[in-house]
Image: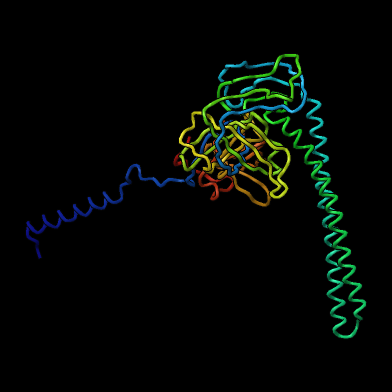
Amino acid sequence: MKLKKPAVFGLAFVMLLSLAACGEKNEPVQGDAPATGIAVQVETVTADTLATENKVSGMLATDSTSTVMITVTAKCTAVHAKAGDEVKAGDILCTLDLSSTQSSYQAALISYNSAVQSYQDQKAILDKQVKLAEDNVANTRALLAIGAASQLEVDQAELSYQSAVAGRNATLAQLEAAVQNAKSGVEQLDTALENVDAAGNVVAPASGTLVSINATENVYVSPSSPLAVIDGEEEMKIVVSVSEALVPKLSVGDTASVSVGAAEQEFAAVIRSVERMANMQTKLYTVTLAVPAEADGLLSGMSADVIFHTGVSRDTIVIPTEAILTSNGKQYVYVVENDVAHYVEIVTGLTGSGVTEVVSGLEAGQQLVTVGQAYLMEGDAVRIVSGEA
């Protein structure tokens, strides 16, 4: 049977469309090649300065006229300010030769700590003896109840207990007197060294006008009158309590970072005094800081967060703490080189706010993986999706 011409032409047209559609479907599309490698973010390793941060809470208090007293006789070796000068908290007023006083202070502090330790050790022993005597009374009474002990034995046990209590109290009273005597010696020297740093520099406890300064080079200062008087507007100070682990790292004149949430204020404050004797109840040491005059909106009684910066490392490798991984007691990171991840073991040092010092393992300029490192293994191909290239 013969097809009509129109039908033939229609069939040919449909076949041509089909072939064209197949050709379009099989032709590769430019730019749609699948991405390869694990997606990561990186940053360049750099050297920086890092200080360990120790955060404590304190309270603001008012402080106006400041008097600096040195309660020992000491030779003035240099004078750095004169009456009428405007001074800031932490400025050096003069320098004293306090080497012998500081040695005496250390000896007094050792004596005090020894007396406290002796008190605590003896109390523990005596308390144990009293407890044994008390238990003996209870046990003897229990034996009396079942007919295994006499009333005389109970009376003797009670007498031994009373004797143990009396002996403990008498011994502790003597030891406590020794502690108070040693404490008094430390307090006297502590007052002498208030507002004085380790080098013998007398620093201004607050900002204001230096009304008077009784110091002359190569002349001994007198403990009977104030060494200096500073008159200023009513200023604020911050009082905090720190642990025995932190107090040796703090010195008069050091700067700390302060945040007062209620007043939405952040500023730097200078340490004006560090007590070297702990509170008997809290076992903490009092540190006082001077608030700069430009810090406004502060009220006495407000809470303040104080960050002391200790253990400073300069020109050291510092990386984000979150980039560090740990396994089997080892710390490691991943770096990227030619789009390949490499495992690197590191040794860390100081830690700060969200960052950590790397003592060994990394060098400045390397590309450190900061996001995605948990999914990597040595030699994995990576694809940097953000961060520094």
